[in-house]
Amino acid sequence: MSLDFDSARLPNPHMTDLHHAWREQLRKFVDTEIMPYADDWDEAGEIPIDLWPKAAAIGLLGLGYPEAYGGTPGDTWLGEIAAEELGRIGAGGINASLMVHNIGLPPIMNWGSEAMKAEVAPPILRGEAWISLGITEPGGGSDVANLQTTAVREGESFIVNGSKTYITGGMRANWITTAVRTGGEGAGGISMLLIPTDSNGFARTSLDRKQGWWASDTATLYFDNVRVPAAHLIGGENQGFKVIMTNFNSERMGMAILMEASARVCLEEAVAWARDRQTFGKRLADHQVIRHKIAMMKQKINATQAYIRVCNESMVRGEPNPADIALLKVQASEVMEFCARETLQILGGLGFMRGSRAERIYREVRVNAIGGGSEEIMRDLASRQYGL
Image (cartoon, rainbow, N blue to C red; front, side, top):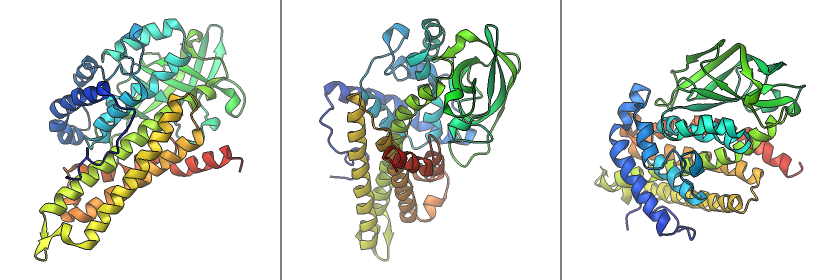
């Protein structure tokens, strides 16, 4: 049996015929509509606008959202398959841009008013409009409780001032689900607002000189006395920190699955090259040092898959453990980095040249290790959850 992307997946007892059919359908879409163009889109720094309605048509954009808003209800395992198949592309910027609504829209679906849901969700899930999440600021990233963008109540409006940066999908977004300070210092003074990007006083600039995720638009956002209706408050006033933390669990789970899939892509490319490449009169795969590299990659991938399973099962039970999910994200980023590095060592000069999936993945290690909470913050979060 060849050691490729599929054979490196541990059996999952939760998968049924429905899940296997979804994987087959989604894989055909990815292989037809994305894979042949991934490198060109990455080099161009954007994905075509018609990809969103195509992804909506097969149920990808709406997966996990209520039918009433144009969604496609689905369980955790269908979502895991979606993340794996998108991770197989080996160009994280495509997934980050195409699926960014999965971090911008859930706060509205979980905490927003019915009017807000009805206005925003249907066009987004049809691939006709876009939403992003605005939390990170120029003066701080993972320290969410210290954010400085202010929203001052004035009658039936909030007046917003400040800025956000490193915002995925921020250049295209029609709405920004935005963290603002409506109260005093610390987590207790934070609220979430839905801010339309056609509001007076809103501006944005592109951040296009990135190490990786080239195909994902990334922006800095500016709010200069932006007037936002008070009805756009997501959840209660000064209750935004709870909204943000709820969002982080699912975001970090999704990132972990994508990183594990990226590690498997690297393993697949390493094995294929080691079988075909001849050095010193024999295949690379016949050198013990290469075989050991591959075995170590598979070992670490296995462990990460098992960890993902445990955390996903806790999510299904409604008992997510934020500490375990935080440490899973660290595990996944470390394994992604290890597998990308070892694969490029095996590929040698070929791995140094742009155009391969492994090369793109190597460039994307750091954004995964930082985004959604850096490795250092994740370890600290876990240690505090365990009472240290």
